[in-house]
Image (cartoon, rainbow, N blue to C red; front, side):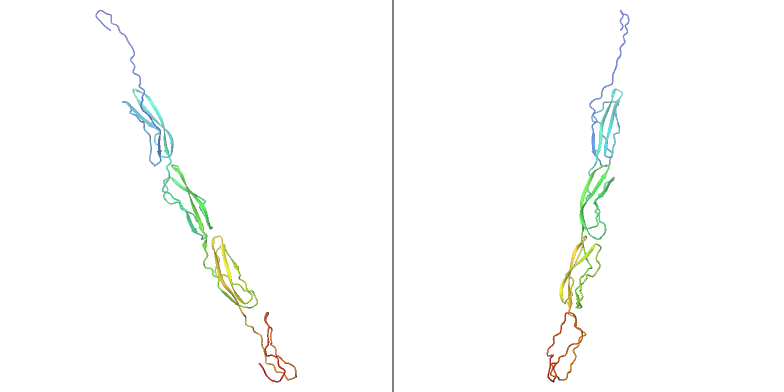
Length: 280
């Protein structure tokens, strides 16, 4: 401070400009559904002149969560550090189906499969999904992937009984010979099948309907019928020869020669004579 009539006065003081606090800027959590592309979150608000923002740990592609950082700095401002959660959530798998499967028993193992295209990084695992014998079970297909929500699908796996073919039961006719007769199926029984006969033995002449029932755990029951017949036998080895006798007042007769088969008997007619003469 100077003046003509004054001794010059010099005074000193500090003039200070302190950094401003940055306000009006936010850094909010960000959540995205996985779609295979890289995601990031950004600050909201207007940066003051002379400041800039730098991000750290702020890009993510796969499902999961991480803490991102936004650092806002400038020569005239107090550095502002903001944090937020960057989350990628698993996506729901679509376009995949698991349909019921029905197969006819043929001794081979059967399974059903999903339909549709698995997204990249996903895989399928099956449970209770193989069957050989007739019956039904619930199969499960579980689709997993790091970036996908678990998808569990169920379906019915069914093996139906097979139809038995190539087996016949033909009528059987036998001539009576005192032995028991029966008829049998023709053809080869499939593995695991068996035959049971009913009304299928006969010794005496006559006819009856025999039944063959073919069953097996993996087959539709097959019932076959046929006629079992015993025809009368022809008697052989028996002769009846002419007889000639000299009259002696007693009645004469002739008899068969040979052995009668079991169950057979002989009855004579016009086979007694006393007086001289001939008769049949």
